[in-house]
Length: 296
Image (tube, rainbow, N blue to C red):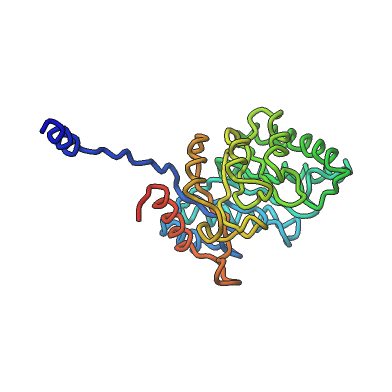
């Protein structure tokens, strides 16, 4: 009888479930649209996308040099008119715009141009600047020299960003680019005080995303969220590839990262040659949130 009463008391004790907290708000790159307009940014905001990353390549690639600044100013007007917040600026990149090249005169030209882009970025009042440490391909026999040149360039550009009170973040890159492993990216950023990294979720092929965060978690200043098959970068909509987003969000939160959950996804895995929509971004983000909170 005593055993029965004991069991009854246990069953009557209320069970309190401590729910996890999801810290993030969603953002998307301006590259979601080939040629973004004010209406596009307003549509994104209407879908609950609170932040934008402005991709300066949309103002740089294929644009006459004399027109770049004007294109950037036009982008600023569209963003302001839409009333959407700028979380980050992705500084321009190309095969030739490389801050790690061994030719010092060419590198000086590239660094000077990137410095000017940082100054242009300041008008957006972004929380973060995203910078590629190199282009590609990079041969094995020149890798160490290219790493040293990249560090010199980044040190200069970090000083430029600091003077404008902007946080510079170095992005991890795939294939033969510099920063293609967490250890190599750590070697680039650890000796420059205050430098952060941009964690691109579909740029690391050599190991697990858990390992990447274990090495660089305290340096993560922003993210680029997109999905892939662990074989090559794909920029699929998150939840369309092989990334375990519930696990990844948990790992990010353990690092203390509380910035925007910035989508750099532009492709639908199942519908080729069709760009994603803000609604798809919002629905993907909600799915990740529900997975993390164990909701159906």
